[in-house]
Image 1 (tube, rainbow, N blue to C red):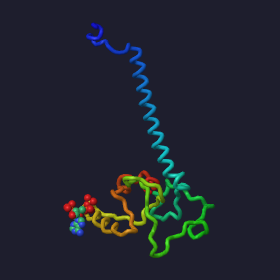
Image 2: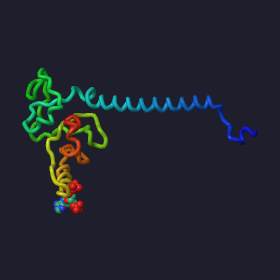
Image 3: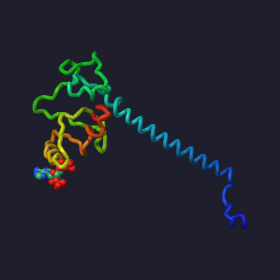
Image 4: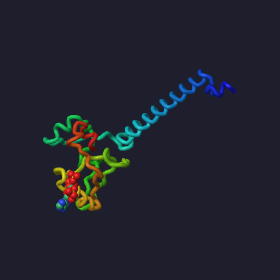
Amino acid sequence: MAYRVLGRAGPPQPRRARRLLFAFTLSLSCTYLCYSLLCCCDDLGQSRLLGAPRCLRGPGAGGQKLLQESRPCDPSGPTPGEPGAPSAPAAGAPSPRLSGSNHSGSPKLGTKRLPQALIVGVKKGGTRAVLEFIRVHPDVRALGTEPHFFDRNYGRGLDWYS
Ligand SMILES: Nc1ncnc2c1ncn2[C@@H]1O[C@H](COP(=O)(O)OS(=O)(=O)O)[C@@H](OP(=O)(O)O)[C@H]1O
């Protein structure tokens, strides 16, 4: 009884230490498992489920710096207009919507591509209003938040952007 009152109740020290060690190892394993799952999902979303790795064709003169980090296209692959290549949407037909992005709240599987249009403006210049007006159109898919690619994330390259 005196043993308990003095606060020495509970398992002996070696057993307690073993429990602590077990809990520590378990938490480490869980952390590693979560980390591995996240990395695995990222890989799946970027390459396996979306087909071949993205590449860029026909870099313009203005984008040379950005494209330095991008992978070149496989020269044996189909080029636009060739059989087997994805055909361009007909005029007036709804263009495919973007899905899956580094910037959207919930990434979905689908085609990832660079934007077809950018809204550039100064702070408090009304760019948000412009975006809201444009995105009313059903064929327009726009980001929910500003990506801040050119001022904060430029160094991450086009792979981050698309
Ligand atoms: N059509 C029109 N006419 C006049 N003023 C307008 C218009 N559209 C947007 N606004 C005002 O623009 C301010 C928001 O600009 P931005 O969206 O560029 O802001 S931000 O930089 O993204 O935070 C914001 O101003 P503040 O209210 O002072 O924040 C909006 O009220």
